[in-house]
Image 1 (cartoon, rainbow, N blue to C red):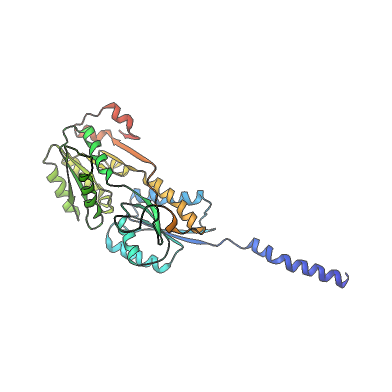
Image 2: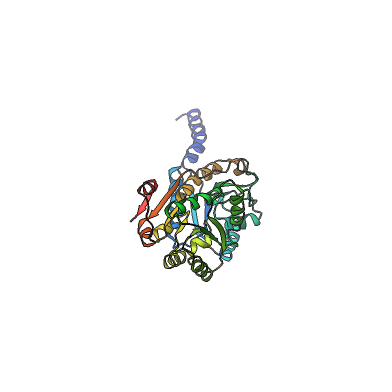
Length: 330
């Protein structure tokens, strides 16, 4: 081979080599940490985690290839939540997905600049997490869960199946869901007037839950709203058992309550919210700022009814009501 041809060939090879090397270089592994505000053994917690993983996969993020997803279950106590939040912020992942009010509150207190996508947080503006729904600002955006108008819908649904309803208690832990007091004030000030008395019940322990439901059950015209509070979800089985014992009809936002034996649930589909949250994770990973992504409302609601529980409570339910339900457990 002549020297000129050899030099030409060598130059072409060197020029082409970086392109070949870049084509063979593995994709950058991005890291996402998801903080779920429930116990790992809770079926609802697993449902949310599964929905998130499926959503990321559908968007082309494959674990071990271009994404690392770490799911952490913080349980429902503040000590565990604060511990997990401190560890996660030190690890500095690309994005944190935060589930529940106490989790997002703990994250904000760290003043971290890590992008945060919240899933299922109530009243994020009122609680001071973001500037507005349209322009959340800073490093936080996400998908909220319910607003105060839901209180009226829960009361109306209970009244539909129990016409004698005269008193409804909204049960929650003020340490983990203080905003429900504001929800009740907003509900009572709105035009959603109702002859049913709606009052809050503050509970901080299993014993207080049992005592409150026993007291409520002394009124034959009572009903109970199990609030969208991680503490209440964590003591779900106690709520359901006590309500059955004292013949108290219970409505909550979560299907899992009904599966465990409460009367009915009405609220946003939690798995759908987690799956939708992946769209914002995807956009932030591709360079968009979380503060410019408007907070989104739930888009899918479900009504689930337990016919066996209704019969045990002596409630006669219209067939037209059952036809409205997305699921009837018999």
